[in-house]
Length: 331
Image 1 (cartoon, rainbow, N blue to C red):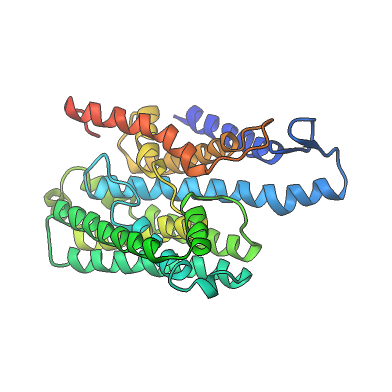
Image 2: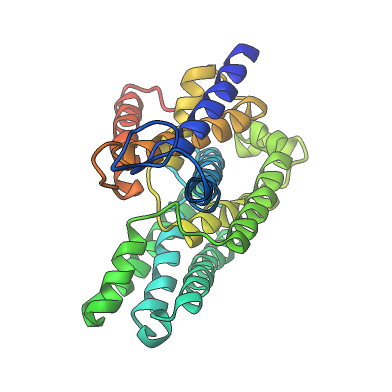
């Protein structure tokens, strides 16, 4: 067990350093379109662009993976992820309203960056508020899951409507945001994202014992003195902080939250959240760093949307989960 954690930590260091070095411009060796041996240019590339991007990649992967684990446990569904309650769709609706509904504001530099993040937060919070209101009146967790998906579908329909009436320039900006990006965050944005994710992980860590009891059923958890309603609210709060922050600053990034918890279960062969939560955080961070490396296509000068890479890596894992669930091996 300890050996696996050590391996993940070593892999984290290796991938983090590799993400700093590899890119369209080589810093330590002539690998890329240009080669910078050192000096002020190399320092600025490293500290102003690649270091923040690597930090964002790890934070996003850790946040999405932890929120996916929480959702899969609460909903007792192997295909539940951080976007199952409409977080991504709500955030997209908020950003669409800002970029497509207010195109004049959305074209201004700093106002655009701050506005996109705030709009994504508001949209995600609106959907989660609806879900939390419903969850207080409906005890069937699967019904809450379905309603969350319906809320997300409604938000997506409104996004399509805004895209249909949006002008070309604003539509292009929204499409770029929807592809997902790990770069371009200012130091203040990175600080806010890191603090929100840290609070979300703290809330998730406080739910480890109730989550373990929920694995044995809601009735058993209640017999042990656990308030299932409070656990749901805490999980929704943690999910909004973890997935909402990532979506706000990086755009919608799919499949990481669904796939990584299953990878952690396969690697550690445990259902205990004391093991799975830190494992999912480490594996998710490593996966996003790896996806960022792959997305840069070293030596070609091209950069792919990170959402494309996460989908290509996550889809096989999700397909395997579906096949296993049909055979009776769900979690």
